[in-house]
Length: 312
Image (cartoon, rainbow, N blue to C red):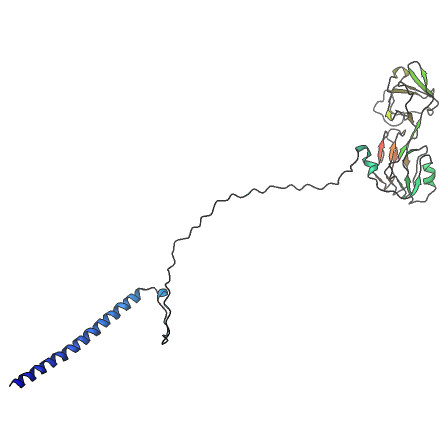
């Protein structure tokens, strides 16, 4: 009897174990399913760009950890720079380039920039017109340094050149000597040409003084002409053409007195003549005339024409 009771007890225990195992197994499966469902819900809430990519596991080799990606922010990035004021650019004025003036006195500027001269040389004391006339057209004449008294007007031929590289002076005056004291003035005779009538227009038409061509120079200073002997004072002169006498109000002793006599220095109708580097002064030019009367296509440059009326 005791053996039967013990066998029944063992059989009951085995039935209990058999029932319990399936229950535990079911509970484990339920737990696993719950966990799997939770994982899927979590994965569904992760952005697609944040999900780790699928990798194939290699046995024995560690797998790389997924890299965390930070979501871009929508806020604009503000960069602060120090405030810089634009620099004012100075405005540069471009001046036209002008030729540099010669480094000489103004009364020397003309002949000083004439340049060199190579040709037939004319010396002071020689008759310039005679030499020019003896040469063919196109000849260049170079006046040497010094004073050239021109008694005959120079008449160049076509394309001839009258020049000087040494500042030669062409003058139409002659020296006056033999002065004698007469009362309060000094007088010299025989220097004037024959009396001639008025020509051209003058600013002073009442006394008709300006049309008279002969002028006096005391140490190269132009003296003033007056209309009578009674009006002669220091620095003035009177020319009596009828008596061929000149009256001077300044003492000429120790001074150089000259009178302009030749009417024109250079004049010609030839074309293409060049005149440069000359000082032309003290010519007895008539009104509306001149010491230099140019022709067609002349080139007159770097000259100094003083004490006369120019005509070009």
